[in-house]
Length: 158
Image 1 (cartoon, rainbow, N blue to C red):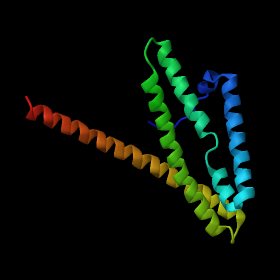
Image 2 (cartoon, helix red, strand yellow):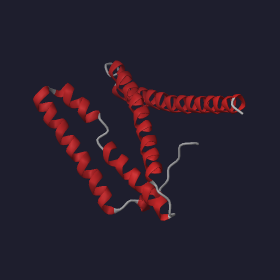
Image 3 (cartoon, rainbow, N blue to C red):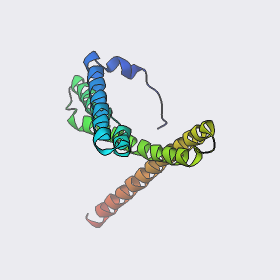
């Protein structure tokens, strides 16, 4: 499944859900500022790098998927959890890319700022896409192995 942009998702979001995202993102930023004041900028920066909006988006994804399934007359609890879990996996992969961005930028900033940004963006893209591809490949492999094991069990136990 290729990565794609879906503007129709904006229509599914209710106005108060944007408010929740804004409020939680702002709260995370304020807490990062407090941590920075108390423990120093290095610690505060770590908290600021945390995807502040992730918690809100995970709960909103869960509620959207659940609502869509319930509209069709089905229980959407499991589907909502799976969609939120997929979003969490994507956030984790994006964090790996963010670490690559920071590392490359840190190493190259002493030479040129524009070059450091360009190289860091390329590193982030390469690492994030590679991590996504690897996760997808490993999931397909493990899924095929599970299918193979279950087929062998069926043949072993008639």
